[in-house]
View 1 (cartoon, rainbow, N blue to C red):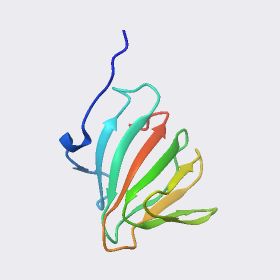
View 2: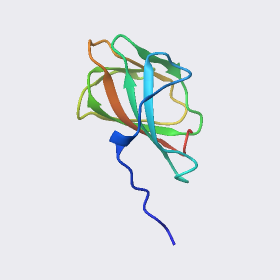
View 3: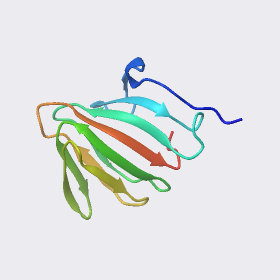
View 4: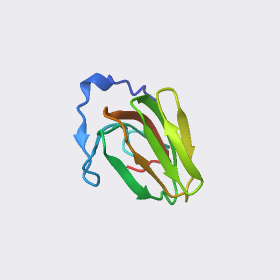
Length: 115
């Protein structure tokens, strides 16, 4: 029988991302817990960013919880602020810059799971 995966995000500590020094994440769902998506909360430090990269197989959907920044793609720059959601299709190069003085926090999904 299927079971509900219930958790409180407050019970999970942020962890430093091994690849990006200005990023901390809370991994909420992964390949081990969800067959179709990985889910995380990511914090980008003030002045930090996620370098330009490409997901070959995954779509990435992110919803901005707090802070401000920019999503930079070959299609243009997009303002990230609370309430904004963005989906990046597989194969589209993108990066994020937090050009503000407060952390940028996003709730992000990768489908299929990236982690």
